[in-house]
Structures are given as C-alpha cells and as structure tokens.
Amino acid sequence: MELEEIEKKVVIPNEQGILSKKGLYFYAPSDFARRYLFSVLWGGEYTCAPPYQIQREGLKLFLAFRILSGRLYFQYEEQIFIAQEGDIVLLDCMKYHCYYAKEQVSFQFFHFTGNCSQEYLELLYERTGPLFGHKSGTGVVFAEILEELSKTQPEEHRLSYLLHNLLGILAENEPVSMDTAVIQAVSYMQEHYKDGITVENIADNVSLSKYHFSRIFRKQTGQSPHQYLTALRIRKATELIMETRLSIEDIGARCGYSGASHFIRAFKKEMDFTPASYRKYFDSSGFRKM
Image 1 (spheres, rainbow, N blue to C red):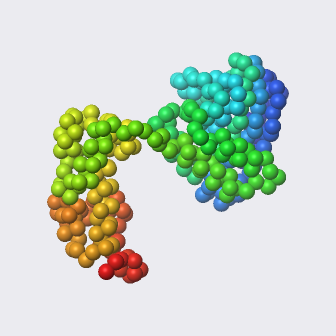
Image 2 (tube, helix red, strand yellow):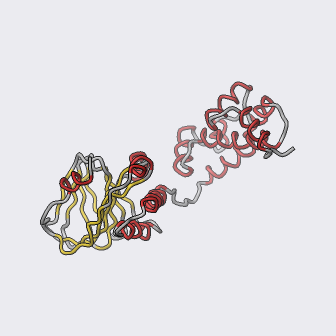
Image 3 (tube, rainbow, N blue to C red):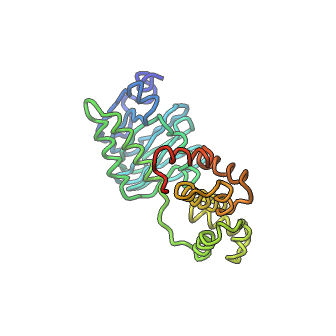
C-alpha cells in the first residue's frame, strides 16, 4: 500500500476530542529501507479529551504509543486495558483495536513496519502482551524517534536504529533475584556438563520435580534447562576446537556427548556448521592457539 493510500485510510479529518497536536509527521522510506530496515512511517503527539476515540483494523502496520500524562483506554482483540504515564503500548494494526479518552490525556505515537517487526511483536506479546510498564530509556528513545521523524529529511538509518533500540529495551529481561534452586542448578551444570547429565539429573540434584524445576528455570533465565546445558556444552566445545588439537570425538566426549555423530549433530544445529568446518576456518585464519 502506497503512503498516500495509507494517509487517506488512517487520517480522519476533524477528529473530535483533539485539544492540541504536534504533527502529523509523515515519511516515505526508500526501497532499501522498505526491504531491509525498520521504517517509521508517521507519528506525532496529541493531547485529547472525550469524545476522542479511534477504531480500526486491517492495516498491515504496527502502532506504538507512549503515554505522557493522563490515561488512554484500549480495546485490543479481546483485551481491555488502561495505559498511563510512562507506559508503552504496541499494537498490530491488522487486528481490531480501539483507543479512547475518558479524561484529558497526552501521548506520543508512531506507525512502523519492516525488518522483523512482526517477529518482535510476537516475542514481546508472548512475554507481556501489548502493554509495557515504564522502563528506563524508553522515553528518551521514543522522543528521539519523533524528533527525527519531524525533520524535513529524516535519516532512515537512524530511524531504523532508534526503533530497533526501543524494541530491544522492551525485550530485555529485567534483572531478577535468582531462586536458590536455579543458582544451584547452574553451578551443578557448570561442574558436571562433561558427565552426560540430563535434565532429570539436574532436577533431582535440586530436589524438585522435572516439570516444576523446568518451569522456574525458564522463567528466571529465559531458557529451558536443556537449552542452557546445550549452550554450555557447545561453548566449551568451541574453546577446545580453537585451543587444542584434540580429535572431534575426544572433544565431544569431554563435553558430555556419547558419540562423535551425536556431538556433530548438536554442534551443527547450534552453530550452523560442523566442528571440523569451525576448526578449519580458524586454522586458515591463524586465530587458533597452538
């Protein structure tokens, strides 16, 4: 859909309830940006009061809000929620969404698309849904996006960088106080990864059922115990490949794999190439220690 068509579809003349606004700022990205970058298409800053209300669906774009003051009310698919000062909201505009004011509210917003926008929203929705409480740094980045968008010639690479930065901040795991069982499990894996241990062994070591242990471990680390153990083993294997002349079979055995074929499959799945290819690359590049 061309930008002119989008503008006709989403900009409503004489919208009721808008007390003041900065923008709208529109930008038409280049072909390169459309293909490879995150693209911010338009945005602005509104102060609204009742009867301000917008209802839409069916647009292949995404919409980001940051609430400056007051509260903005949302209906999104089957969810109803309220965003207040400092909150960020991300919406998929293909899905039904409605937002409205019950009192005076000020907010910034922009529509975006491109790169891995869809995948980022799916990741974020899986974790928290469309509403994000205040996170340090989001306000500054949001303001910088709109400042860049308001320029006569916005720099699309900077817009892409800033939007990626905003999504990255939202996706960052908040520091958590690790459960004693998780700390103990990590220590056990680091000590025994070469012994062929399983998730069942680790759960037994911390005196939890496999299901309960796996659930709290994933919640606090963002990975399943199996994923964590595999990543630990592959990391140790890469060190041995680079720093020793041990055979591939010996390295696999030292990292907890029962046979060379099992090790090679696991390594290739994680690294996208075989242990032998990895070693050959560093041999030819002169990085491997002798």
